[in-house]
Amino acid sequence: MNRIFSLRLLVSLSLALLLGLTQPPAFAAGQDAEAPAAAAEVAVPDPLKRETPRSMVSGLLGALGESDYDRTALYFDLPPATTSRQRTSAVAQARAFHAVLDDGGTLDTFIALSNDANGKFNDDLPVEQERVGEIVIQDKKIPVLLTKGQDGEHQVWRVSRETLAQIAAITKRAPVATEPVADEVVVAGAPLKDWALLLGLGVLVFGGLWMLSALIVVCMRKLVPDPEANGLYRFFEAALPPVSLLIAVFVFYNWAEQLPVSIVARQTLLRYTGIVSVIALVWFGLRLVDAISELAIARMQRSQRRQVISVITLARRAAKFILLAFSAIAILSTFGIDVTTGIAALGIGGIALALGAQKTVENLVGSVTVIADRPMQVGDFIKVGDVVGTVEDVGIRSTRIRTNDRTVVTIPNGDLSARQIENFATRDRFLFNPAILVDFGTSSAKLREAIGIVQQVLAEQKNLAEGARANLAKFTDRAFVIEVFSYIDVHEFDTSVLIRETLLLTIYERLEAAGITMAFPAQTIMFSPEQMDALMQAKPGVDLEKAEPVGPPAPASLPTPQPRT
Image (cartoon, rainbow, N blue to C red):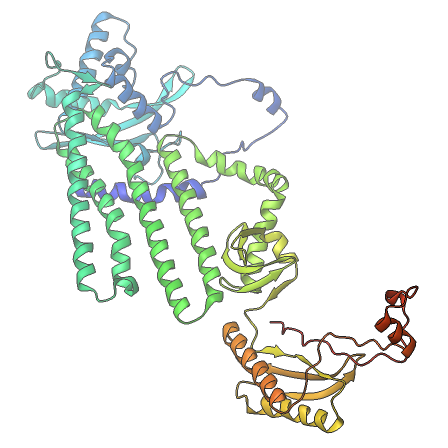
């Protein structure tokens, strides 16, 4: 019986969220001309909150926790107590009901109870009945049935007369203790020793299972050659801690039912233990998502498929967000908050939210665009506007770029997807295009020799792509310009820098060995004989700074510009 109840509880916990998402909101079906008048009448709720099986059981446990048996009797399907004898009989039945629940009785957990005013329709019971638990007295099982009926102006659920009659018949033959133990400390409607017993059981079970899971992970780490790259180890490392918590929850459910403790303490802890099970499931999901994503990222990095890393990162964050959202809905449902109304309101509120959060939606769409279009990857060296740096992370809202100054620039993905992105990491080769300036004093033969030297150096370099050339491009006012146009056929920037340096040094060394002078930034000024005499004799009245040069200026040369990478 306990195993069947635990299995039913697991199914209820798993389907609670799906029922909340798929159950349509209850709208009024027949609106006619009298609808405004009907809407004006405000329905008064039942003061005992007996409208649904869930609220009825919660109210019943509240009355039992306060030992208010007069109020407890109002949750029974009994005729109104108009005489003192009827009142005494109802109180006695309430005490007996409390005693048999404490001694081997069970009630369905909060999340497993129906929160619909009509109850469940798939329990093979009449529509006016609902099964909410079971009582075992002398090996005889009595189902705890609720029946729906009229109490004044309210449709309410109450413990059925059939259940009360069976309990009365059995307790009459085998009386149960209905009086509380003297000098017993009661906390929140249950004896303190019962709370301590249940909490100690939970700590003991979870602590033992957690230590066992930690021992298994340590043993596997010593046996596996490369734990970080082993998928099986990563799975067990991520799964065992939350799974141990989940197993502890179900063990606690089974053992707590068999303990002779107060029904109030037991049901209270079982209700909020459902939250622990939800946390365990979400914890397992989060750790599993992290383990799978980290393993996939490591493999993508080894295979140089960096474009997939951004997709994995975005998918991991989206999966975590969905898990946390589902857990929040399940926890709210455990606390009795109607999530179906909130989910239905999202359809209307989503429009207002989209209008008020246009930038957020724009950044989210921009993230999808960046991931799908792949103009860059994590680790790429890019230029976006005035920002130049390495991509560190492509998030849901923004992208972070580490600049050469080691600062981090965050750009919203909505802006990033609309801007021009220059990706330096995707270059298959590097341009080698220096301008070599030869002095104007060089003869034509030497100039031809200089061009041949540059062409020979290019031909000897194995890392240059085909089509490398060197030609006399133009005459400037200071030098002959030999233009080189070629590509360094490598993918790594650091390697291209070394090859560029080797080419420039080799060209300079061979031109120097051939006696060919490179142009440099100098200018020769020619003076007339009179100006030279004045310069030599320092004749008064002659301003040498304002003396006009005679004849054309002597050719001068500019220095070789530094190559650009």
